[in-house]
Length: 111
Image (cartoon, rainbow, N blue to C red; front, top):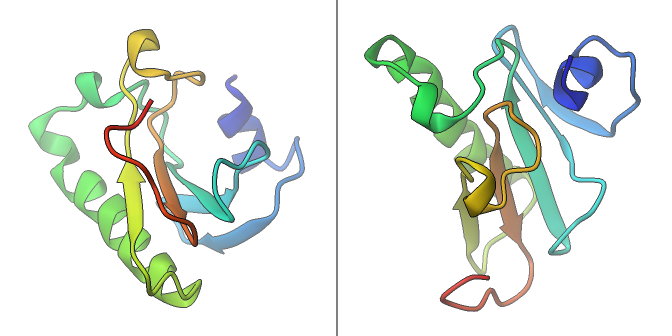
């Protein structure tokens, strides 16, 4: 089980800020911005590269949840949505997840 699966199963505590039957969102334990939320599908999908056309609705939902949470968390100055796919991209947990970062100026290019 990944750390995200353990959070979903409530085996590891997390500050959950949103949840439904398909996904869960919680604060990152190592935040890179004042707002750093992870949006995680409850169904295990290792990474974006493993998604299929059948995952279209789930992938769209993750982005819309990011939009809604940005509004809820008042990230009015702008925000960044990031999906790392694979170790070279900085993926540290092999379970698809979306990072929502905001409330500070974010440099470009990242990393």
